[in-house]
Each structure stands twice: as structure tokens, then as C-alpha cells.
Length: 201
Image (cartoon, rainbow, N blue to C red; front, side, top):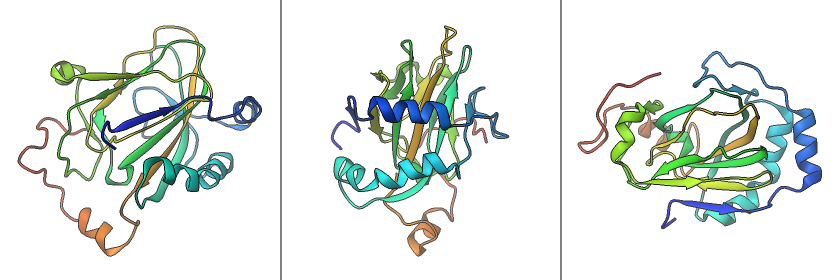
């Protein structure tokens, strides 16, 4: 919680990696973020992983968290991830790397931002030039947790022909559809020191 991220190496067994790689079906999502493909949020395999890991993941990140949603994503040559901060339902994100043959890090800005946007807040690469980037490199089987709600995170365009695949699971301290959740999402007005700039949906 102090560093806003944690990496655990070799969390997923080789047998389970092969299972994921053979079972997951990717497609171009209508809300396509920077060219990548992904699975459905209702994918059975991904949701089984989401449910089966929840108890141990709660112990890792600490505190009372609720599951929100999950999917798997696939990056190919030229795909990128613009600097952004996540939804209220993504107060903690976990990336579980299931396929990676080259270096394709995700960068996490060290600076903390108050974020009162209800939607995904996206900026240009130029915006994050003054941030202090933390480089998170995951090999197959590694997992990383980070606070994507209050820290910008991004990937630069993939330069080689290999494919990077990961399962993304998300957690919130607010139970979905609860009174507190509705209050949090009822106003979409940034606080005074929230980032300013274009908001892409």
C-alpha cells in the first residue's frame, strides 16, 4: 500500500499457463483501447480464475475489497495503452501475465492524483513526461497489483511481433450497487487538484 504496487513472481503454474493459452478466446472489443484484443467480461475461464484467487488476493492487497470485473487482453505489434487512470471499480488492479516472449512493461506514474472522474480518464503520452515512471516487467506466471485509480499507467507501442497476454482482475473498496457506490458515482466533477485535460470515452 505504501508503494502503490507489488509484484509476485511465478504465481501461476506452467500447467495453468498452458490451460489459459489454449482456452481463452480474444476478439476486438467495440470499446477498443489502442488496438488490443480482449475476452468477454463473462468469459468462464477468466471468471473461474477471478473467483478462485479472490481470498488469497485479498490477503495480498490488505483491507476489505470487493470483486468488480475481469477480462483477459492480448497485445500485438503496434498496440499501445495510452496514459490513463481507471474507473471507481478499479481501485486496485491485478495483471496476471500468461504469455510474454519479450520485454513489454507497463509503466506506473509514482505521483498520486485525486481522481473524481466516473469514466476512464485518458491523456496523451506528452502529459506524463514530468511523471516519475515505475517500470513493471512481468514474465509468464508473474502477477502485479497496483492502484490504477489514482496513478497514471501506460504502455508504449509494442515494437516486436510477439504477443503479450494477461488476465486483468479488478477490485474496489465499495460494493457495487450499494448506497456508497451510488454516491461515489453520482457526481462526475474532479476535485481541485485532479488532472485537467481532454476526457476520452
